View 1: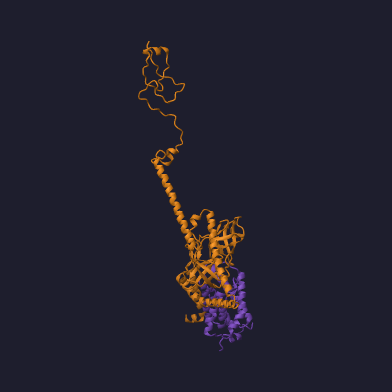
View 2: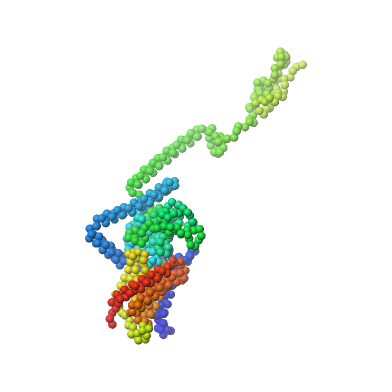
Length: 406
Length: 173
């Protein structure tokens, strides 16, 4: 046995190392109902290996990056362009901020056109962000990962959105104390909910093999034209709604399914030349003081209007209570007298006279000369017949005639 | 054929390097591999950790050392990506083992041989990566053999420049 191990020592070591790694892979790759999955949160051991690798690689990488920046800074300062560059930086920051605000305002305006402004106004596009420098990558085109110099000590957490002033960039995947791993949107395992600006068609954005952005699996639609802007839809719980993503480059047929199309996307952000990014740490509304004041005034006005409306309703209610003939509180609304649309009934009975006389309807007699002269011709009072109608008709005849004495 | 005859086999020496070189050269390769794509963009047609693994495996002519170095480099690369840890590890473990095994049998100081070996081991590592990812793990992977071919060519050219530079660190017996 000992000689066997000594003889095949190399192969034994190779097999041990390979088996250990295969076992490690088997533990990592979990099969779920939707198929194999490795892009969820890592287990403790795996995360520890990533932490070690990051701890070993990141410091020299950041050093190289800082050296590069230092050398660049020295060069530009030598050319006495410091102030120009500073101004440029400030302007660039202003442009980035204004672009974010513009995206917010544009989306709010469209929302208002769709009569949703009242509900959506509180959803602000002014976010709390942390600026970070990109200093490294995964080193392979099979994994579109990059590293930033901000980590959990700066408040970063997994699944936070990463953007630039131009558009979305990716999401935070792993967070280390002073650095974080960002999964770019152009990775094939990435995904973001997007919406086409004009046609309002929704889809899922992902990366293809070459690291280009595409929206896959859409129903063919003639309205989709190159150049149409694409925004985040906000349904993925990572990217807030309305952030720029890119524009439609071209529409191609889905090679696997008839009637479906894929949209190739020109990214708004320069994903292969990222230097500074913003990590959205909170999507809670964060208005500037002036906007907060405007919002408070608007709320106060809205409250006053609501109070006035309430008072008006109360007054009309009191009025209704004072007019019981118009509104019967015991009847349902559809049976109120004011709502009665049936025609008046012709079968109404007139009240019966307590002491009928000759003027009572139905008791009238035609006067004759003899009757007029003889006192015996006094009419005997006869109870009037029961009649169905109050209006006499030509066919109506008296049922009892006055008796004449012979 | 003179590369494979017994005389040359016997005459092949095992190269030794300072301890610092064993630590710094792989570390530098890993750091540059992670940093250079930031400078050159998407054209990552090289794999410096693999080139360094092949170099030390060929020079040391020790399959166990080649295996361990390949595994370590591959695991570090995996740890920097978001993929499962071990895919590159397996690919580079095999590359390191085979490079050391080949180094025992042939003279590897010849530039043409180094060029061919670098190209071959690059293609092998890509193939193993593909097999592990797509068939062993059953995961979907976008793959382009053209990119892998460019990567193999890039590794071969880098080896042509890098190997003579690293030869300077050799310790004289």
